Every structure is written in structure tokens, then in C-alpha cells.
Image (cartoon, rainbow, N blue to C red; front, side, top):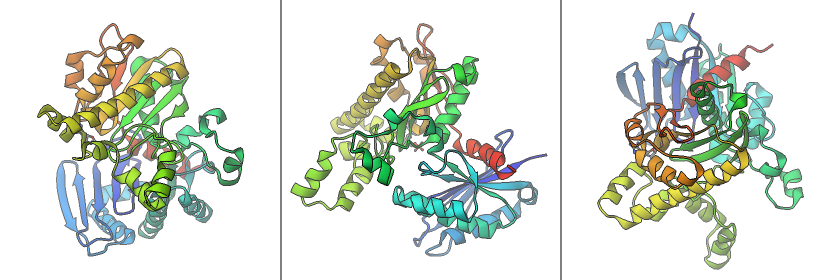
Length: 398
Ligand code: AMP
């Protein structure tokens, strides 16, 4: 008997959805409702390989999108009747949610309350949850938090060296994000190493438009690069990652930026995009670099340097490494980024196999290290499957 879960990732202007068999990971239907709140809203989905696009009404809300998703599901009777729960990705769970949980009015209120730390994400999640409750009133709804995997970070790691009262009064600390992805690929790496996860020291690098890297010691997350928000850490598509915080105050005090402008600049106009002055798209930058574009090269060099620096520091933290893992759109596809990163880490016992590395792309997973290296894997992530499994775990807990 199939146990299908509807997995929803509700953003401010889009809803990604997938129907997943929680046991096998089989995903017969997946899609996205995009440009919500605008005039060009679309619902795209693929049932197996068959793709369909539907226009949404102007200014479509999350509720409109979810009732359209419900109407799509009605076309696939067997799938619809095999749905047993809805799982929601929630970005910010704060210190309140240490694991996934069944959504009731209190949980919804707490997720709304945490929006002060992730306004774009959590408010959209609440809109998505309420719309899904209206569209699928018969199904239990579960929230799965990006931050939950990082609840094991020690206090001396998750605190910033600010006055302690800021943590006590306002909860300012490192949370970490992309938890479902780091969880998934670390468990997959353990399987490939033929070891229990509790025996594994791993570094997992999720490199997509957003990038984060996690240090895992004996199966447990002990450090991660994203922080209070997903802005800290690596160079990303449009986010700057680590900078001297005084740059923000300098821009406000000396350059007349507002706080909102600084935040927008650091989140939306920085990273690969900001340095290259071309694009946030890593593949396009590799093409431009090949044509001799110096800014594209600089952006890629900075991306790789920051990554190398984090891997080096996490090697110091976790002790003997069992494996390094690449995932995310860049991690899974860019043999260039992987190769250039590993070349710089040769003195730390890591070496790439050029043939294996060039063969792994387009969602394939496998070993990319040479015989003399510590294992390095590329593993295609599957956050939706983690959410589906967690949803089943928590939907029916007594
Ligand atoms: P994600 O956010 O995980 O979907 O990842 C998006 C990023 O992956 C973008 O920067 C893409 O340019 C990058 N990407 C996808 N395919 C490739 C590729 N073949 N080579 C380099 N980068 C890629």
C-alpha cells in the first residue's frame, strides 16, 4: 500500500509541491505554482515525464494556488486517494521546534511568531499551511523545520560573541539552515561508506543559489555556516556570506543607506551576482570565464576560496574525516567548482579523480575522489523525501 505525502514548500511568491511515496521516495507528481501575487501566475507540473502548464488568475494568492493544486490532484484519482498527509517545509523553527511536529493552532501561532527572525519565509509558510488546511481538510499537516538538524550544535558554537543578554532576551544565535539536505546527504554518505552514521565524521557542502556547509562529528551536526539567518557563511548566488559587520553600520552612517537597503543589497545584489556584475548563475559564469571575462573569474575564485577556507576549518573541528560531500545545483553539477576546491585541499589528504568527477552531473551521485584520497562524494539531495518521511513519523504519533 502506497503512503503518499503531499510535500509543500511555500515561498512568498511560489509554492513547490511534490507527491512522494515516503517509503520508496518515488515521486510520481511534482510541480510549482509561481509568480503568485503578480499578473503572470503559472502552475507547472509533471506527472511522471508528462509536463503541463496552467495559467493562474491575476494576483493569485496561496489559497488560489492550493485550490488549483487540489484540482490537479483530482485528475489523478488513485494518487489523490493514496494521500495520507501533508508535509510543510518551514525555514525557521527557532529554539521552539527541535523536531518536526503535527500542526495545530498553537504550532501555527509559534511559526507566525518566529517570522520576526525570517519574515519572508515564515509568513509565507503560514499562508501555505492555512491554504492547505482549507484545500485538504481531511489530511493531517506536519511542519518540518530546516533548523531542526542543527539543534545539536554546542552552545559555544551557536552563540555569537555579543552581550549574552541578546541571546537571553531576544534569542539571537546561530540556527543553521538547509537541515533536511545536510541530513539526507550525510545519511546517504554513511550508507556508501558502509558505516553507521554514528561512526561518521563528515563535511557536507550544499552549494546552490543558497550555499551552506556543515561539520558532522559522529553523525551529529557540530557546526554550520549559515547563522541567525541564511545570510552568513559561504559566498552565494546573490548573498554575500561572511563580512565584517561594521560594513553595515558604515553604509548606514556614512553612505546614507537605510537598514532595509543594506539588507536588500547583502541578500539580493551580492555574492556571485554582485562581484561578477553579470549573473548569479554559476554555469553562466563558468562559460563567461572560459571566454576570458575577468569579473566572472574573480567571482568564481572568491566562491571557491571561501569554500576551501570553511572546509579547512571544519577539518580542524571534526577530527579524522570519513568523507566530504557535495550537493545542491552547483555541488551536483559543477565539476569545475569541485575540482578547483579539491586541488587547494591536496595537502590535507583530498584528491579528485578527473574522470569520475567529469562524469558526475545531472542528478547523479557517486565517488569523485582518487584512490589515494579520503572519500569525496557528489550526492543528489532529496529534501522532499526527508520531509515526506518526517511527515509520516509525526502525523500519526499518539
Ligand atoms: P539550486 O539552487 O540548488 O537549484 O542551484 C542553482 C545553481 O546551480 C545555479 O547557480 C546554477 O548555475 C548551478 N548549476 C546548475 N547546473 C550547473 C552546471 N552544469 N554547471 C555549473 N553550475 C550549475
